Amino acid sequence: MPHVSFRTNSRKTYRTVRRPFEKERLDQELKLCGEYGLRCKREIWRVQYMLSKVRKAARTLLMCDIKDPKRLFETPPLIRRLKRFGVLTEDENSLDDILKLTTQIFMERRLQTKVFKLNLAKSIHHARVLIRQRHIRVGKQVVNVPSFLVRTDSEKHI
Image (tube, rainbow, N blue to C red):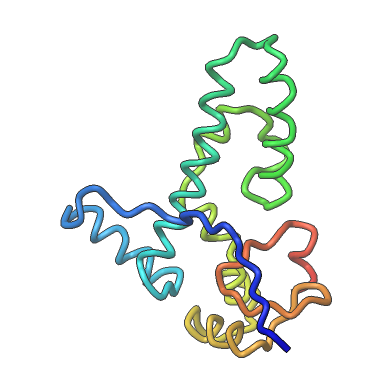
């Protein structure tokens, strides 16, 4: 039987830094890597890229007029999606709250961090090993990706 491969259009998931040897940024990234048990700085860049796309969407919606149909149509789904991931709280309902988001808020929603905070692992690195070895389920689904973003409704099913 012939080998059939399905090609997918892959897109960039991260953006490299403009200044690779900036001291403050290097120190900050190293601190984040240690705090959240990351494998490499590309994982930080991936979260920063995701955050920049969300903030860019919020900025473009803020530039529109308040009564603009695009702003009225696209703002509630954006806020609803961020609330479902637990990045925004229930009382944060504006585009200004989206612009206040930080990398740490997204890092707290990772499965690796959640497993450690729920005391299922002895350390943040042990949490990563448990996830990679397929010992952790989210609901009925076995997840082996440490960077999996845990939604608020499935948080209690880890």
